[in-house]
Structure formats: C-alpha cells, structure tokens
Image (cartoon, rainbow, N blue to C red; front, top):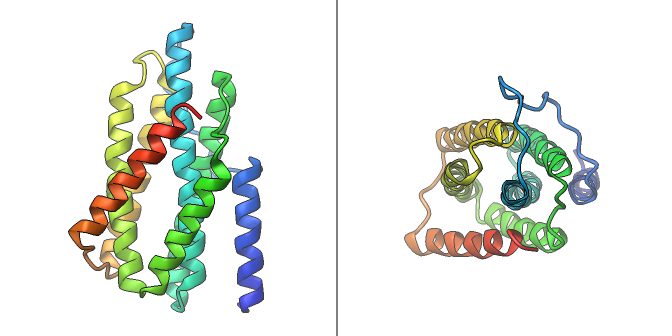
Length: 208
C-alpha cells in the first residue's frame, strides 16, 4: 500500500467516524429479554453513559487508524486494522443505542478524534513495541471503565447493558492480542497521564 493510499484510508475512516456513517460488520448484541420502558431519569443516565462510550469508540477509531498508519510491519498493520473494524462495530452499536434513547453524540467528537489520532501517531512513531504497549494500557483502562458503566447503567436498561458487555469482552481480547504481539510496558507516569486524560474526556462527554 502506498503512502497516499494509507492517507486516503485514514481520511475516509475519520469522516465515517465523525459523520455517524459507520456500519457494523456484526449484528448489534440483543438482550435475551425485552428492555422495559425506562423513565426519564433512567433514560437520561443511560443516554449520558452511552454518549461517553460512543466517544470512546470515536477515539478508538482514531488511535487504531493512526497506529496502522505509523507501523511499517504489515502483519501488525493488519492486526490494528482488524481491531479497528471491531471498534467500528462498537461505534455503530453505541450510535444506534443513542438514537433509541433520544440522546445525541458528544458535540466535541472532532476534538476527541484529533487528540486521539495525534496520540496514536506519536505512540506509533516511538516503535511497534511502544505502540502495542499503548494498546494494552488503553484497553485495560477502557475495560475498567466499561465495568464501572455496567454498575451504573439502570438495571432495566438491558439493551445498553448487553452492548457494553460485548464491548468489554472485545476490548479485553484486543489488549491480550497486543500483549502477545510484543507490547512494551509503559512507564508509570505515562499510565497516570493516560488515566487523567481519560477522566477529563469522560467527565466532559457525560454532559457535552
């Protein structure tokens, strides 16, 4: 693949992620029982939490696209691209659920995408081991974040809960695959900065 082709693919990915035009390759997970009607308070909470999750998937698209662009290893590029396709499923599922809840995506999605893309490109330029280490730590933090959302989502919101559970399972697998591919352990201060940045993003996206 030429550099121009890679850049065009990256641009197409960004437009799809930000325009809401992403399409899932897998069916959206469906709860075994119908979701009961949610009251206004439950609906608002679920909408806010799923907006945060949608932002996370926008960022995941940016990260994996940038890391695939930065690596010179064809096998690793394919691994990043495969993970990005599964994150596209998450993006489409959370977008669909936001619509069902009558909620909107974050107004700051272009900002989140640009920031995540820059971080992913920087990590990729530091070498494949560092880039993979960034995936491991990111997915570990996302998995923990989704676990907290499972505890906060209304018990009655079965539709959102089954989506978040599948996302959590996928993120754990992505992290394990990156670890097996030769990820380097990130320094403690880097992990702390990542957690602090994620906290700012999730807190802001909950409202905006």
